[in-house]
Image (cartoon, rainbow, N blue to C red; front, top):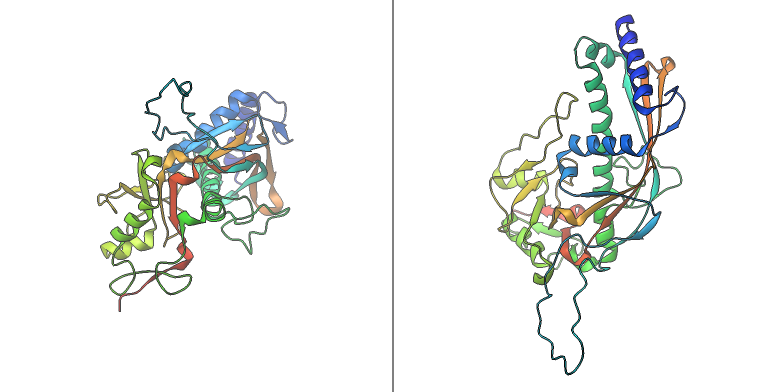
Length: 337
């Protein structure tokens, strides 16, 4: 680390200590609720997709998700001679069970990159944006790929953090398999698309997935998340996904000008390239423990880097299991002839 960078980093540590109200940020410390709220907002704002789903905090360690949408079905007529009127419960227990899991979000920044940022007046903003964006991307990736909670995760084997937590797609597959399409025709474990496929085009596939959601469970805000590979094949070109460098304000999703299956359609970073998911995005929930964040900052010269050690307690949930449907991306194949 260059001397000028060292001065900026030392000032950064002093500023953090004042912000968090602790004498030394190089030792593990709790994060107060007001600061924690600001951090969660910064993470959410760094990833556009996270601003569209339901992110909330809780004092509980486990529970059952409640629907955040009004699904209708409350209009009726009662013959009170046969009994009293009864209101329909909104946000009833139609969602998945969840349990918070301790998760480490440790972000290392090489000295070389710090030295590059040191020449910019927004040194602090670059550094913190890199940290929040890295955490946000990890949280989103786990939501799409997570299948288990291992005592010790193995990133070498589970490159998409499948063993860090149980994400939305796995919960749908295991708890409402009828809405998780794994086969489209006679061939087992195959969903084919193309001129010779069971689905002739992406419109047909998305429409069929959407039809898996009962009408009375639809909110009118359903969106189709479509995998980049499927869209690229359909429009015969590769979409340009926004960069993910710390200089970007957000990691953007791509709102497609073309709808699929009559639904507004988006391409989301980290979503399976051959996948399709249809739901009201607010139906996807990311739950964290209130006052559960911990943090430590360390300079690690043995590795030529600095590291922000941050931990949180997270859980993924679906508010209404009947109001979401998806395709198993691993089973999707192109079949043109």
